[in-house]
Length: 181
Image (cartoon, rainbow, N blue to C red):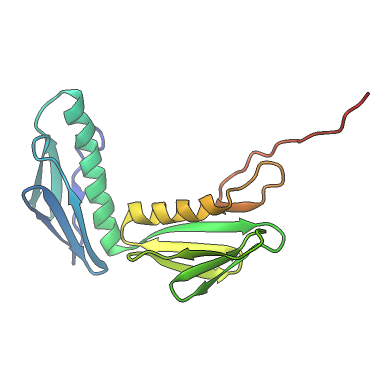
């Protein structure tokens, strides 16, 4: 039995979980999320204020999906009650970000400002010119948008400049010390 898969998911007040033929729908105060699932591998039951995920077999594909679907549903329940959040930091001389409507505009040492359109379902906030906060109810989408923003100028290993996640440690390299002949 999967350690993650066998734990029931408590449903908080104000959240409604509905299991359809091949899809789980979670509605809460912040929105609605849908997740497809494979009924040939797992059974999802909603009873007594909890969601239980049980697998239909004991082979590897069944075990793999058991924990997966339990984690996905738990993330959806948490997302519709309190939003997911990823924070990014910008390091570098003159590097900064600002919002212009639904577009994140960043100056990152390129010859031009970089414009990043913010997708639907995600909020982006710039509390300081060197901090970007990505929020939303869908954990996958929040992580994807944060990764795409970081990918524009990833931290480089010599000076550590670029965009990084809050708390991310960058292993710095020494670099060339000069040729001694």
